[in-house]
Each structure stands twice: as structure tokens, then as C-alpha cells.
Length: 101
Image (cartoon, rainbow, N blue to C red; front, side, top):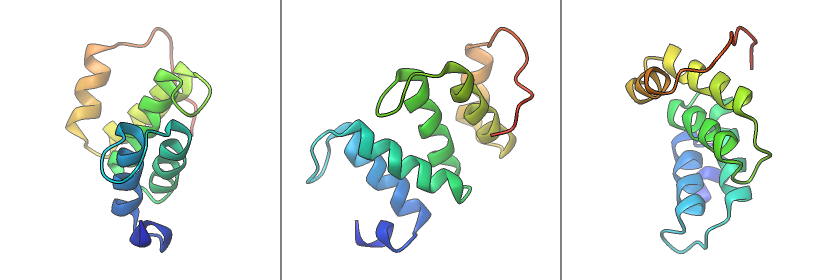
């Protein structure tokens, strides 16, 4: 967690995963997980971008917002993340999402 607090974007995403899953020495805390995913996403960390999208899709730690979730998925897909590209192919969103994050 020390690296995450010093701005290490990979560590921020990893700490978010720990809080989301309750693995490691952390208890499950979706709000804290989404905070770490958001920090990582702001720095362009692709997994963090995808994970904050998941948080919005599931309403885990943040208010449910499917539109915002798809915006994050699209952002991760544009960064060539295969998982996000596949996710979007498997779950088409009705309508256009040309809004920026």
C-alpha cells in the first residue's frame, strides 16, 4: 500500500483489487477499491480504467451507472486492452457513447 500512496499507478490498481476481493491483509471494501481504481485510471493505468468501469457497472463502491461504465470500457479498449475489447463485443451497449470521460 505504501507504493500506492506514493502514486505508483500499478500498485494503486493492485490495492484496489485487494480491497475489491478481500485478498491479502485487507477486508472487502468496494468504496476503497473504487477509489484506488479511479486513482490508477486518472493516470492512464489500463487495468484501473477497466476496473473502475466494472465498479460502475456493478454499483460496487460507486453509484450504478452503466453509461459511465461503458465509457471506461471504451477508453480501456482504445488503449488496446484485449479484455475491454472483448467485453464490449460480448455486451453491446444500446445507443451511442461518444461522450468523453
